[in-house]
Every structure is written in C-alpha cells, then in structure tokens.
Length: 218
Image (cartoon, rainbow, N blue to C red):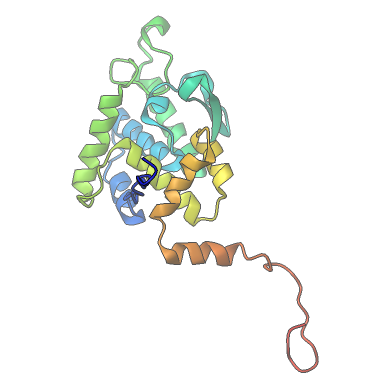
C-alpha cells in the first residue's frame, strides 16, 4: 500500500464567455416589452454580480436597496452584492414596466418576488436557463461554452480577477465559504492577464523615486 502514490486531481481550466460574446448576448434583447426589459436585466445581473440562478429567482422586493441587493445564499448565508450604474438604469426601467404591467391586479395576486413572469408569479430556474440559451444561440457563442447561468458566474469571477480584485474580496461577493473555491478561477486566466494585474498592483506604483545627478535611480 505504501508504494501506491496518491492520485493527482485534474485541474480543469474553466472556459467561459469573452467580453464580445457577453456584449452580443445582452444586446440581442430588444427593449420593447415588459418581458424584454426583464430578460435583459436578468442577464445583466447574472453577468454583473455573479449570483447563482437560484439566488436570483429568490430575490424579493424588500431585498433591493438603493445601492445593493441582499442575496440569500447557500446554507442560509446572506451577503450583499452591489448595484452598478448599468444595473440601476435597467432596474428603474423594469420596475416602471412591472408596475404598469400589474396595476390592475390585486396586491395578493402578485407574488412578492422581484422577477415575475407574465402572470405575476416567481420566475423559475428553467425559464432563466431558456432565456440565456436562446440569446446565446442568437449571439453565436462558441460551442465549448455551455451557456448556463453558472457560466455567467464564471465570467464574472474571471473578469473581476482580470480587473485586479483580490481573491478574498471576490469570495465575499460570490458567497464562497473558502477562498480555495474562488482561487480555481485563476486557472482560466492567461499569462498576459496575470502580468497585467501584476503591473497594475506593483508595490512601487505611486512611490516617489528620485533620480541622482547621473540619471540613475536611487
């Protein structure tokens, strides 16, 4: 038994959307109806916050504040996610259309969830899956990307890392119990991305370093 070596766990590189694909997916949705604007906001929120699809379905009206949303995550754990300027713009538009859409319904006929279907009932996970799949097909997303809501979460994580966020802060935003779970997203970054992040966060950035009379750095 001592001669048997431990098996090495395969380190899978996560393949997810690129920026161009995300832009094409979101822009594929017109803004003509209540459902159009709702679907566009759903996709924006998935890509912009990295929330799980189940968490998005369970957002209630009282969970939405001016600058953040309270998310009810796994294991009854709660966390806050930010509301970006783009999200806020579409949230306002959606809320206005939602109010108009259901203004003739009695209050007890409208479920207390933020995202509702045409009958004022909470949206299902399968419906959100279909929304994403439809627009991924229209946008011509690469075949190696599964086009599931969890891929939006992968995109969010890798984009935040490219933008220079630290793993601990990212784990808080994503609702991970352990930063080791979050660190797996580092595998999907290209070497050039790592170098770019390193340059942005160089320890000497912002320090005043004087030159001596010969032009050499002190």
